[in-house]
Image (tube, rainbow, N blue to C red; front, side):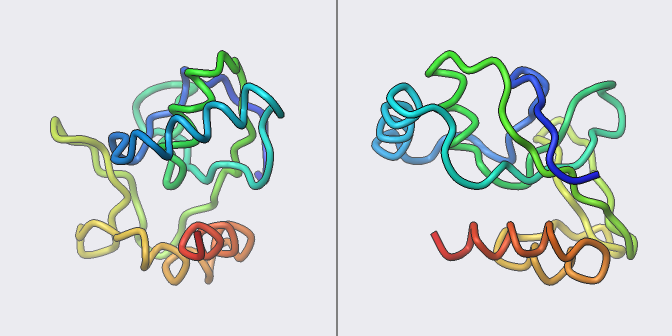
Length: 128
């Protein structure tokens, strides 16, 4: 599907904000310059119509929302090879064919066979 503009309130982040300083710096940058750089990486949510599970970008999502953006760019990844979104009361996550959660550092390797563009974005996240 590639990059699409999506409403910020339709994005479910991969985890809570872990670094308030990073969040504040990103919010300030977005307020001054708008969205800069790469899009978020996500997949359609299996049960929330019109929603996306972000695979990257918890801080960027929260900063964009705090800065008042209504839409942000999201690269919609194509899943294959048994990859699926697992829904739970503890939070939704991307899982492999054995139903094990996929860690951020392994994301590019799982996505590469099905969506090289998504893998490249995941690799860029690891480099930050």
